[in-house]
Image: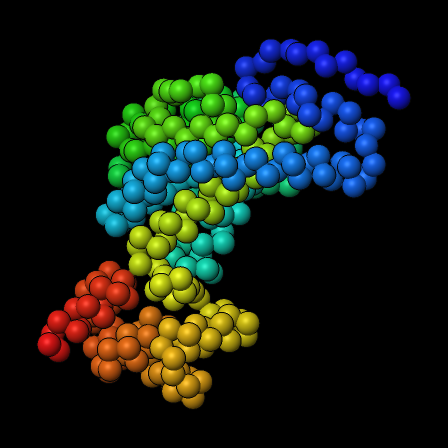
Length: 309
């Protein structure tokens, strides 16, 4: 059996380095390959855990922006841009947020979601120009780059920073401790990839975990959930309509019949039906309480209970 020489070549980004644990991966059995990949993947959650305080700062900036009527922008290229686009798209049906709350900017545009667009990620001016087309003062911008140095992303962040917007960068390069134009640097140390430079692997997994946590925490802080239930979801198909009814039953402990009647009385609005049942008020009162609490079910319930006491 011939082994590949373990020569170490120093490169700028850790994700581009050769991984000493997988130099013989092409000599392994199928289950051995999968085991080696899985062993690398298991390191990702701990790497993400180490940056949670920084991620929390990004969440708070996003919450502040959205509460003020502003928006959140994602900026990425390649895998990073595709993951960001996916996260933004899923928030609309999951939490029933307006379609322009989260805007994804991907180097190369829509075509690059399915096909590689040469040199798109190397154009810092294009990143800045595309972001500035929709950026408004008070928006929050989150960039993503495995290498920590993608020009398209860094150009957009610098432009946002110059406009006075808060910015954050999710980077797979923990060696860089600061980046110009970035208020919050979330540098995740996932180390070298199992296949050198294939940042769709550990770096991409870390970005997916971070994006999901970031957007979900933002939605929770904005009152788009009640307990751990999705009470702001949009019931656009039979599956989701069934889920809406199940959520209402879970939250109230009431019968399917009573919950179905409450949903009908609330015009299909799960939050209104929930406050209506839990507070014992009519749907109109429930809707007014929710409006006053900016959609927070717990705050709406607290205000109604205070009035009743």
